[in-house]
Image (cartoon, rainbow, N blue to C red; front, top):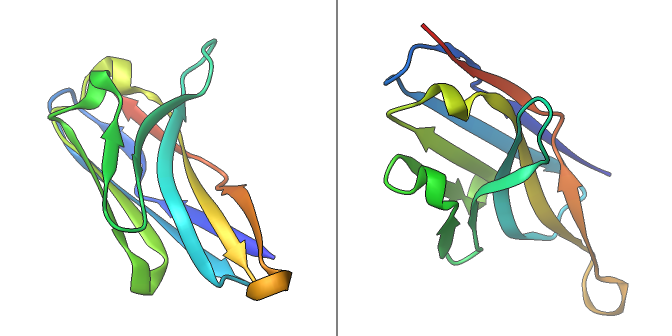
Length: 123
């Protein structure tokens, strides 16, 4: 079994910064794409940013230039550096990772989610 544990959320004033972390642990052979999603009250969950195993990235238009995603493959950890935060960034942020277990004929891949961490941007 695999666990994704997020940390780093909290309350910040508009224009401030936060750094989210998400560490995967358990039965892991490798990890494919890792990403961050968010869900605001009354809205659907949306992709914020994602990063491939080789470092290629993709961002939602609403966060381009303000958020930076990165990963440490040795630590099975993904980060989200958030700057110039706005009230509309307020949401629960979820980590997602495509987990690959086993090798050869026993190899399996599946998406795994963290429990979510609250980010509130307010004065």
